[in-house]
Structure formats: C-alpha cells, structure tokens
Image (tube, rainbow, N blue to C red; front, side, top):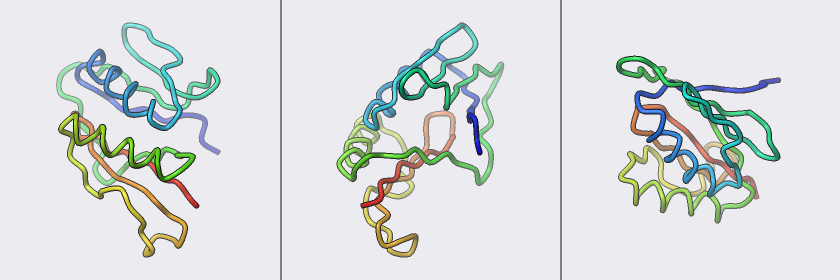
Length: 122
C-alpha cells in the first residue's frame, strides 16, 4: 500500500550518516544520494527518504515510521547504537504484550525530532 515515506532533516549529511548506521542494524542500506535527499531500502529499493529542509526541520507531531526487523537481536543492536549515539529512546527494546504477544520493538527519536520504531515478531 505505501510506496515510500520521507522525513525532513536540517543537516542531510549528518542525518544520512546516522540513518545508515541505524538502519544498517536492520539490514537496510543507503540506496540513493543526491544533494537534497538520501534514500534507504533493501535490494536497491527506495522506501525511506531523508530530505534536506531549509531552516529548522519540524517533525510531525504524533507520527512515526516502523521498520521491520528480522529478529529481536536486530532491535537490540539498534537500541545499543541509539544509546551510543545519544538519541532519545522513547520505548526501550523489549516485548510489549499490550501491542501483541509476538511484538518485540523499540521507539526512538532522531536528532531532528522524527520518531522511528523497529519491530520484530517472533
């Protein structure tokens, strides 16, 4: 149903480098880069975009993107990296039976205030 999603960022170089590390934990890679945008996906896909925004980037209130993880270990790796990067972790890695019996995820904020989630189901 969804072809792609994008976030605005104030510093594209810094955001692209951060997301290359974060999404690398989940098996995604940067698949395109130009002066105004960077795209990430698997197998050359362009599923998630970062777009340079002039001035301060404003994150959407209450919105987030959830990335699929293959296993809880990937979610844990993302959590460790997020802590090392000094990012705000809204919900630490772990099971959330209130969401679902097989759910294992994390929710965090990037440096522009955008919210991402990574989730594995096992």
